[in-house]
Image (cartoon, rainbow, N blue to C red; front, side, top):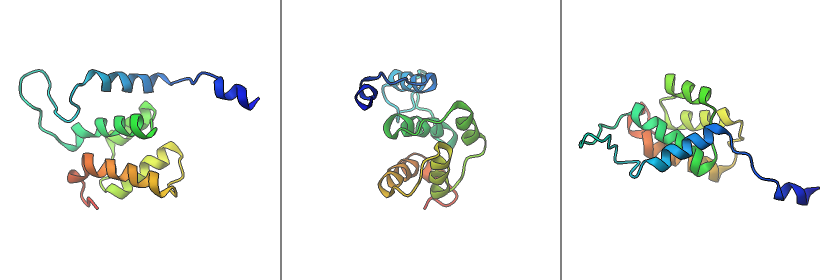
Length: 119
């Protein structure tokens, strides 16, 4: 039975495929180019979707669309609170120090400069 589970194809939810397709369509994620020949100004609001996409594709924290909308409408404005909220949204135990540090580093790098208390 265990051997069969290893060979079973993994089902990827549609929202994860959508995120992967959006990332693949962008050559320079950090560049912020919108086709008008000028870079877009960066802000918390413009970087948040990229952060959530990175957390999904690189660390497996793939929130459902309604969870992403909740983060966009009322995001925690502190790096540690944001990191804890990511773990809570996914139902993952934050006691894994290595994983927690990886998520926190991405939050800090992507949106930390716009946080009230960047940590």
